[in-house]
Length: 239
Image (cartoon, one colour):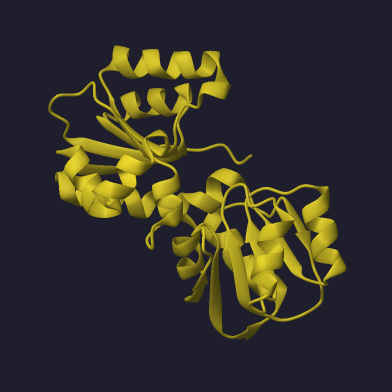
């Protein structure tokens, strides 16, 4: 049943071709409720138990490189009888996914999707000052930016790679489509230096919360298809 819903959302062929980018772990035979977060941790599971959630939906799995935390998550899911559904690349590429949904939520219409599909470009209805765009994001994401570069130019076109959009190649590609601002969920020295070189506005928020609007959209679609009660966001760290 869950796999059928995922096939409808992302296409069976795509999921079959990317088996390491999504997953279903079922420990609840008759689920009635669903909650979501960007990243699954032991804290997520305890919150789910406290709120009588049967199905946890996330963007990130408990990755192997998290070592003993992954072991604890897997053990807790089994011990507490919870089902976990996650979609990483499929959600990044979906038209209702991470970058696409974030741009829509701040009032953009979509003008470009990169060939790899992770990067999106949206356009605001009219030129807006950079501080105003950041204020909208602050309210939506319930956090302040982790880093910014204010190039003192108005913003209409925004390039967006939620999560780990740290690569200068993403900015270079987006600039070929006349962006005024780059929005992402992680940064490093080179990203900001490259943006400054081109006098491009940059806003960096947390990895978890730039992706949360897309995760929420995914969770609500699953909830509707599986006819479950929505229990809401289970919490994420503002890292």
